[in-house]
Length: 361
Image 1 (cartoon, rainbow, N blue to C red):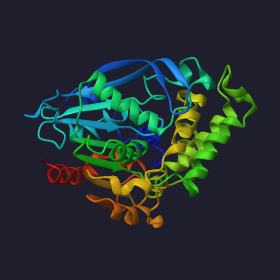
Image 2: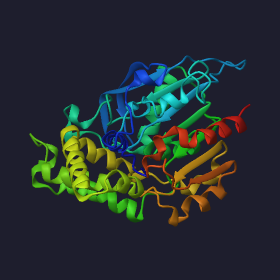
Image 3: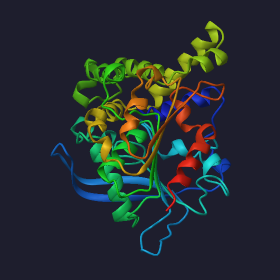
């Protein structure tokens, strides 16, 4: 969302009865894998002797006459999420099947769990607050190393992502401008995180670190007060007023949904993991180098996104600096779900098809 909030968006859909995480309903099945790197040095100067990146793939790579892979698609999740965000009927079921925009019989689809997330190495594995303070540049570098060193992918047909993954897509376009044919960032902005967005992140970070029970990250049980405060913030970040009013039209219905979401969050969230996930955005700022982006880039936001509100006008202004850039603001409809619109592929898949067509070589 400019935050991510992936797992929370999914949880919200589940509670509203609108989202299925059953990969078996989504056509092709993912193939899991892991890549272990040794003595990885972060931008902070910290090092991990062993770092595991988990990932799933669909399809197989193909190469062009120049010997480079020509059908790889990198899909990047949001803050707090994992590859599971993309395995449901609302995403994989709309994009990965035969004849669909990212048909897995034609494309080699790669979906990593970023460091600090999912089944990849993270603070809760044992280092707690002694875990290296990774940032977005580290995360993108690790994604590239996974592609090149583990999967033999030296070129991407497309890089796309939701929320944090959208921000990573902007960074990919600047850090490795010749690596991909197209970029498709969803639910993100190409500027550093400031204003209300930064307030929201500080509410998550400070809520955890200022709870005495956090104990500098060495808690024996979750710091409930701080974690609950952080969860309250996440619930507002992912809110979609129109749909919430329809689904919870009474005080009792809203109270029941609120209590359920808080309890679900407390049962599935580790405070250190969440803290690191939100702090990682501190280095994000693609704005100064937007003119260096040469790939075809199509950015999409939704008008009911609490995290990236349309009244800021940032995307419309900054996209003019991107040579082959285009921005689409989706209007609020019965189908949009606030920030979580980024994972409802049926709403924006036609724009993805347009991008793939215009970026053909």
